[in-house]
Length: 188
Image 1 (cartoon, helix red, strand yellow):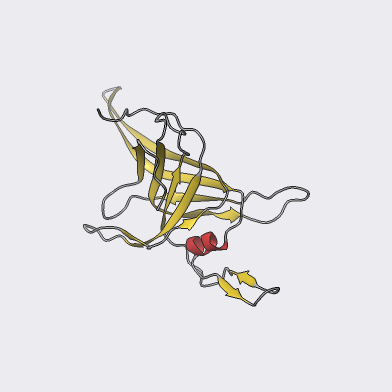
Image 2: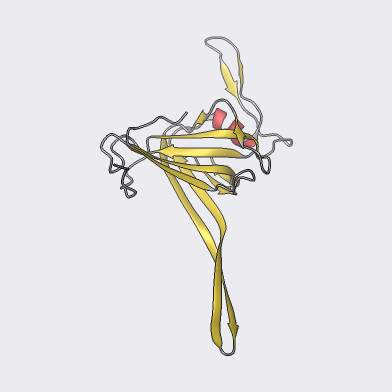
Protein backbone atom coordinates (compact mmCIF):
# COMPACT_ATOMS: atom_id res chain seq x y z
CA UNK A 1 0.00 0.00 0.00
CA UNK A 2 1.50 3.39 -0.95
CA UNK A 3 2.05 6.14 1.60
CA UNK A 4 -0.68 8.73 2.02
CA UNK A 5 0.01 11.98 0.16
CA UNK A 6 -1.30 14.16 3.03
CA UNK A 7 0.50 14.89 6.30
CA UNK A 8 0.75 17.28 9.21
CA UNK A 9 3.93 19.34 9.58
CA UNK A 10 5.10 19.71 13.16
CA UNK A 11 8.40 21.25 14.17
CA UNK A 12 11.84 21.25 12.57
CA UNK A 13 14.74 19.25 13.96
CA UNK A 14 17.53 19.76 11.43
CA UNK A 15 18.50 22.00 8.53
CA UNK A 16 21.60 21.89 6.36
CA UNK A 17 23.01 23.74 3.39
CA UNK A 18 25.19 22.17 0.72
CA UNK A 19 27.22 24.14 -1.83
CA UNK A 20 26.10 23.71 -5.44
CA UNK A 21 29.26 23.06 -7.44
CA UNK A 22 27.84 22.57 -10.96
CA UNK A 23 24.47 22.89 -12.70
CA UNK A 24 24.94 22.32 -16.43
CA UNK A 25 21.97 22.61 -18.79
CA UNK A 26 21.06 19.09 -19.87
CA UNK A 27 23.45 17.58 -17.31
CA UNK A 28 23.25 16.77 -13.62
CA UNK A 29 23.56 19.17 -10.72
CA UNK A 30 26.41 18.33 -8.36
CA UNK A 31 26.83 19.38 -4.76
CA UNK A 32 29.74 19.49 -2.31
CA UNK A 33 30.55 16.20 -0.60
CA UNK A 34 29.60 17.52 2.83
CA UNK A 35 26.78 19.68 4.14
CA UNK A 36 26.93 22.46 6.71
CA UNK A 37 24.55 22.35 9.66
CA UNK A 38 22.38 25.36 10.49
CA UNK A 39 22.73 24.98 14.27
CA UNK A 40 19.75 25.44 16.53
CA UNK A 41 17.30 25.67 13.63
CA UNK A 42 13.99 27.12 14.77
CA UNK A 43 12.13 27.82 11.53
CA UNK A 44 12.35 27.31 7.78
CA UNK A 45 9.54 29.21 6.04
CA UNK A 46 9.03 28.96 2.28
CA UNK A 47 6.84 31.17 0.13
CA UNK A 48 6.52 32.16 -3.47
CA UNK A 49 4.89 34.57 -5.81
CA UNK A 50 2.76 34.00 -8.89
CA UNK A 51 2.16 36.48 -11.70
CA UNK A 52 -1.18 36.32 -13.42
CA UNK A 53 -1.92 37.96 -16.76
CA UNK A 54 -5.30 38.33 -18.36
CA UNK A 55 -6.30 38.78 -21.97
CA UNK A 56 -9.31 40.93 -22.68
CA UNK A 57 -11.08 41.64 -25.95
CA UNK A 58 -14.59 42.15 -27.25
CA UNK A 59 -15.41 43.63 -23.82
CA UNK A 60 -14.88 40.27 -22.08
CA UNK A 61 -12.22 38.16 -20.41
CA UNK A 62 -10.81 35.83 -23.08
CA UNK A 63 -8.03 34.06 -21.23
CA UNK A 64 -5.75 34.09 -18.21
CA UNK A 65 -2.26 32.76 -17.76
CA UNK A 66 -0.22 32.46 -14.58
CA UNK A 67 3.38 31.55 -13.85
CA UNK A 68 5.69 31.20 -10.86
CA UNK A 69 7.53 34.47 -10.44
CA UNK A 70 9.82 33.47 -7.60
CA UNK A 71 10.37 31.29 -4.54
CA UNK A 72 11.84 32.60 -1.30
CA UNK A 73 12.66 31.14 2.08
CA UNK A 74 13.73 32.41 5.46
CA UNK A 75 15.41 30.60 8.32
CA UNK A 76 15.82 31.41 12.01
CA UNK A 77 18.43 29.59 14.05
CA UNK A 78 19.55 29.86 17.65
CA UNK A 79 23.30 29.59 17.15
CA UNK A 80 25.78 31.50 14.99
CA UNK A 81 27.77 29.31 12.60
CA UNK A 82 30.95 30.56 10.95
CA UNK A 83 30.88 27.51 8.66
CA UNK A 84 27.36 28.42 7.45
CA UNK A 85 28.45 32.01 6.77
CA UNK A 86 31.41 30.70 4.77
CA UNK A 87 29.11 28.39 2.79
CA UNK A 88 26.74 31.27 1.93
CA UNK A 89 29.32 34.00 1.26
CA UNK A 90 32.42 32.07 0.38
CA UNK A 91 35.70 32.22 2.20
CA UNK A 92 37.04 29.91 4.84
CA UNK A 93 37.01 29.60 8.59
CA UNK A 94 40.53 29.78 9.98
CA UNK A 95 41.45 28.00 13.20
CA UNK A 96 44.55 29.18 15.03
CA UNK A 97 46.27 29.21 18.39
CA UNK A 98 46.40 26.63 21.11
CA UNK A 99 44.62 26.27 24.43
CA UNK A 100 43.87 28.57 26.20
CA UNK A 101 44.10 31.03 23.29
CA UNK A 102 42.44 29.21 20.39
CA UNK A 103 40.58 31.25 17.76
CA UNK A 104 38.15 30.49 14.95
CA UNK A 105 37.68 33.37 12.48
CA UNK A 106 35.76 34.10 9.29
CA UNK A 107 35.88 37.41 7.41
CA UNK A 108 33.54 39.00 4.90
CA UNK A 109 35.86 40.62 2.39
CA UNK A 110 35.59 42.81 -0.70
CA UNK A 111 36.09 39.67 -2.81
CA UNK A 112 33.43 37.59 -1.02
CA UNK A 113 30.86 36.32 -3.51
CA UNK A 114 27.38 34.99 -2.90
CA UNK A 115 27.29 31.32 -3.78
CA UNK A 116 24.49 28.95 -4.78
CA UNK A 117 23.55 26.19 -2.37
CA UNK A 118 20.86 23.66 -1.55
CA UNK A 119 18.94 24.03 1.71
CA UNK A 120 17.11 21.11 3.29
CA UNK A 121 14.98 20.99 6.43
CA UNK A 122 13.36 18.01 8.16
CA UNK A 123 10.68 17.39 10.77
CA UNK A 124 11.47 15.18 13.75
CA UNK A 125 10.21 11.58 13.70
CA UNK A 126 6.51 11.91 14.45
CA UNK A 127 6.51 15.44 13.03
CA UNK A 128 4.50 14.04 10.15
CA UNK A 129 1.35 11.95 10.14
CA UNK A 130 3.57 8.88 9.72
CA UNK A 131 4.35 7.70 13.27
CA UNK A 132 8.04 6.88 12.68
CA UNK A 133 8.39 9.00 9.55
CA UNK A 134 9.46 12.51 8.69
CA UNK A 135 9.10 15.17 5.99
CA UNK A 136 12.04 16.68 4.11
CA UNK A 137 11.72 19.98 2.22
CA UNK A 138 14.52 20.96 -0.17
CA UNK A 139 15.18 24.10 -2.17
CA UNK A 140 17.58 22.83 -4.82
CA UNK A 141 19.29 26.09 -5.87
CA UNK A 142 19.20 29.23 -3.78
CA UNK A 143 21.29 32.22 -2.83
CA UNK A 144 21.13 34.83 -0.08
CA UNK A 145 18.67 37.59 -0.96
CA UNK A 146 19.08 39.65 2.20
CA UNK A 147 22.08 40.15 4.44
CA UNK A 148 21.80 37.80 7.45
CA UNK A 149 20.55 39.26 10.73
CA UNK A 150 23.56 39.07 13.04
CA UNK A 151 24.76 41.00 16.07
CA UNK A 152 23.76 41.19 19.70
CA UNK A 153 20.72 42.04 21.86
CA UNK A 154 20.78 43.65 25.29
CA UNK A 155 19.81 41.24 28.07
CA UNK A 156 18.54 38.68 25.59
CA UNK A 157 19.61 36.07 23.05
CA UNK A 158 20.16 37.24 19.47
CA UNK A 159 18.45 34.92 16.98
CA UNK A 160 20.42 34.88 13.70
CA UNK A 161 18.35 34.59 10.53
CA UNK A 162 18.75 34.73 6.77
CA UNK A 163 16.63 34.90 3.63
CA UNK A 164 17.20 33.24 0.25
CA UNK A 165 15.78 33.40 -3.24
CA UNK A 166 15.47 30.14 -5.12
CA UNK A 167 15.74 29.56 -8.84
CA UNK A 168 15.08 26.34 -10.76
CA UNK A 169 18.04 24.11 -11.43
CA UNK A 170 19.28 24.61 -14.98
CA UNK A 171 19.85 20.85 -15.24
CA UNK A 172 16.38 19.62 -14.18
CA UNK A 173 14.14 22.65 -13.68
CA UNK A 174 13.49 21.65 -10.04
CA UNK A 175 12.71 24.46 -7.53
CA UNK A 176 11.42 22.64 -4.44
CA UNK A 177 11.30 18.99 -3.40
CA UNK A 178 9.09 17.56 -0.65
CA UNK A 179 9.61 13.97 0.47
CA UNK A 180 7.50 12.01 2.95
CA UNK A 181 9.46 9.12 4.50
CA UNK A 182 7.73 6.18 6.16
CA UNK A 183 10.82 5.84 8.37
CA UNK A 184 12.74 8.97 9.41
CA UNK A 185 15.90 9.66 7.41
CA UNK A 186 18.71 12.02 8.45
CA UNK A 187 19.78 14.84 6.13
CA UNK A 188 23.07 13.72 4.55
